[in-house]
Length: 132
Image (cartoon, rainbow, N blue to C red; front, side, top):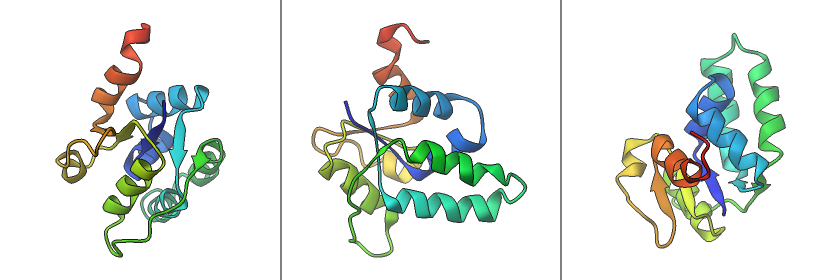
């Protein structure tokens, strides 16, 4: 199984305890995580802008992010990072793209890849194994 987390899910998992953190942790433990440099650069920018009072957040993000398999970025379309991330995930063979972005969730599946909100992703990926 390959799982790609949108930047907003990475950020939520890094800064707040909860469902996104659990998805990240469980996916990392199973070596399912895919990411790109674009996720890292977006996360760094948001952490610096919105969470300057949490100085350890970037180091924590980087430590966890480095455990994921970094796949090639997709360069097009310029100016739409959401499309770029979904395409990178699809091209890398991700089965699930996890996002809280309503716009991206509205795109539905991308071939064999499902685009799911965190709660739906948790149920799809982990609920069957008794990890509620």
